[in-house]
Image (cartoon, rainbow, N blue to C red; front, side, top):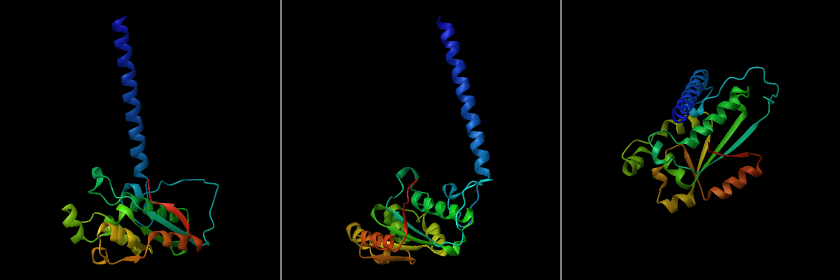
Length: 195
């Protein structure tokens, strides 16, 4: 009886391994098709091509996108650009890949909480993390694509971050909460910048 159980266990382990390998191969092929219509970012920013889709969007409409960025990368990925910023790049890339011209996409990124560290300059980042800010290029690429960054003054005060510690493309509001209210009342659609 025991040899049969061992044989069955080996068979199921091999089948599981084969299935995982097949899934990894499928994902590798799929990832090879990813495009980055506006912002490269990381792999998380890419989009897959979709053929023969039946639901379309009005490419002449104005798209007002409001992103609430609060998270800082966990230690396991702190050498990479901010995951939330990559999610924002992904959403912008999705809109453009769907045919919406970038000029019709209006982007506001409200930054507060631990995410403030992702929009600091290299001097601040070096002093706190002993490395250059890995999100700096992505912040500048998003700004070049038309994104407006707004840091929360209340969170900055709470964390001891000064205006001089922020990247030059960052604006400062009295509070993230009133900025979120304001832009939503102006018709912006709010997304959490999380994956």
